[in-house]
Image (cartoon, rainbow, N blue to C red; front, side, top):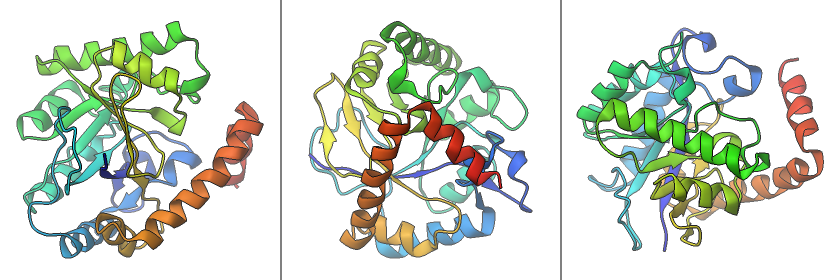
Length: 261
């Protein structure tokens, strides 16, 4: 079973990283300028046949040619400019919301989330509080993160929310099992892989991430499933994974300190 998903975060204008999403050096690494993001979308459009970019159905249990575009955190740029830029191309995206931040400065409010859903975009959970190390939480704390977030979004949308993405890239089997227990049927991780897992009770779908400074050829190459782009991210992920395991919470502090310089 295969799937190709690309992960973005916020899209900003005028270099104002504080305008959308979380405010930290680590978060800023994933924020693209509007013109930069537009070029990434152009590269995807040039790389794949029309109709390829789509939103997932949790019932998709087979190899699929679609490309899934996902946006984490729930920053306000999802409403403008991201959704509009997707829609001009006939596309829809997956927006994963950190529900404790709904309505705060720089984040979507309930009305904007509902509007995105009514326009055909997929809405999912990105946990309630966006813990820095989701996999390190107790099972009870994981359950609370997923259940609260799914509950908030289901109430806003008046439908059962069955999509989610793991915050911070810290995934484990327990995280997947906890999400499935909360009703999640498709869980997007940060692992750069096209292989889809099914062992925890929900689909586990990896994603390839786009960071600031990566040229449009990355989005286009990933969408076209070119091996060089996929293998390079996999190699970096594996190296970073060792540092995360060995460093634990200290890894996050060192990373943030280095980025802040």
